[in-house]
Each structure stands twice: as C-alpha cells, then as structure tokens.
Length: 152
Ligand code: 4NP
Image 1 (cartoon, helix red, strand yellow):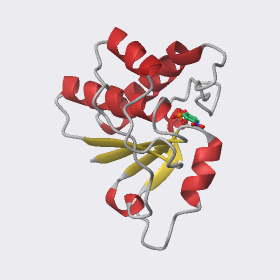
Image 2: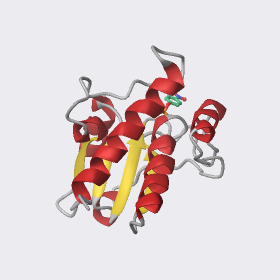
Image 3: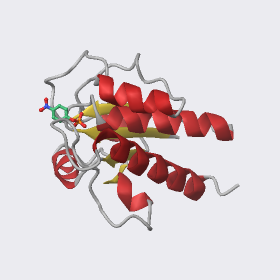
Image 4: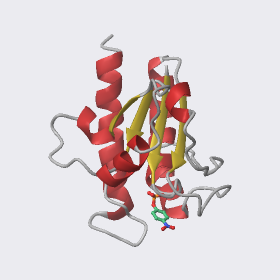
C-alpha cells in the first residue's frame, strides 16, 4: 500500500504524517510505502521545519532527513491513498486529477470519526495549539487509518 500526505509547504504538517505513519506501520509490521509533498514549491529540497522535527522527536519519530517536494499529477496514479491536511489542500489536489488518477483522495482527519474538525491547522505562522496540536491530530488519524486497513 502506498500513502502520500499533502500540505501546502511540505515542511510542517505532511512531513509529520509521513514520519508518523511510517513509524506506526513499522510497529505493526505492515509493509507500507509512505511519502509526503506540498502543493507549493517554495520549500522544495528543504528539510522539515525544526519545530516539526522537535515534536516528532519527542514521540520517538525522526523526520529530520525527509526532503520537501512539490506534488505532481502522476502522484495520483502512483499512490493508493492521498491524504490532504486541509480543505484548501484537498481542492488543489483535486484540481490536478485526470482520468488516469486512481488514488483515493481524502482529508486525513476524515479517518478519525471522533475528531470534530476536518482541517489540520497550518502551524507555520503560529496557531492554536501549534505543533503539538498538529502532531496529536496527525497521530490519532494515522492510528485510525491503520485500524481500518489492518483490523488485525
Ligand atoms: P505546511 O506549512 O503546509 O504544513 O508545510 C507551511 C509551510 C510554509 C508555508 C506555508 C505553510 N509558506 O507559506 O512558506
């Protein structure tokens, strides 16, 4: 199974999705190919924001060697699941879809039925809860996704 996380810059939110899902899948012994990208190209080639690196490290997940890249239309053919961090990202991804796009494109937080919000807030300029809140939302949604695809 191939899973792609998408946010705006690919330096704050989607790198956490990539690192957390890879970590949790490994813990469960699940073979999963995980990647992340941004709808924008401003940060292409960069490592994640140090605040994302720090909160991930606090939970035992190393995202420091991931590199940002921009989404390409063929991602929607090569991945099975494409998870958008917010509704703006979702609209941008859907705008790239072609008849060849086979991926299931969805909001990450829709995976977690007990989550009251649909959008993982962009923490780049500081926001409610900041990076700890982002990590908690992403972590719980990744667990819920794995529970669904691998009920054990
Ligand atoms: P991300 O956060 O989409 O979670 O990676 C952002 C990072 C950078 C910018 C916007 C959002 N930016 O405008 O540079």
